[in-house]
Length: 100
Image (tube, rainbow, N blue to C red; front, side, top):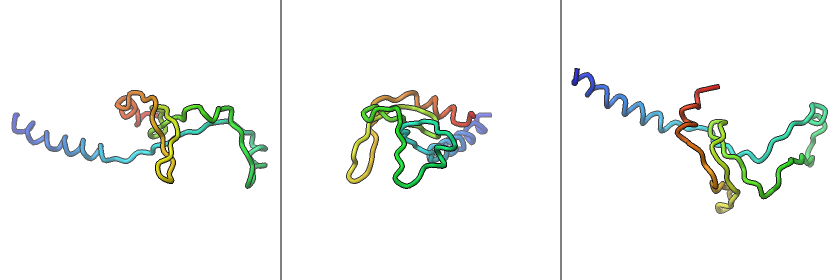
């Protein structure tokens, strides 16, 4: 029996390494609102959609469409970035990723 366990350990480690290399969507949510279908049909180039969120409020950080934290916008060179100000239990989020 110990030989079987010794053979399984590398396989489990390889599987874990494979899982840890998986790439998942990282989303920063600015704001949300609902529009009627008629409002959507009236949208065009230059249209402005107003949100009931102050511009200085933190943005929501989602991993695989599951919220895990909050952050504020930062400039990284010429790119947009998010400085995390609050983060939840990332391990719990990973455990629930397969749930619908």
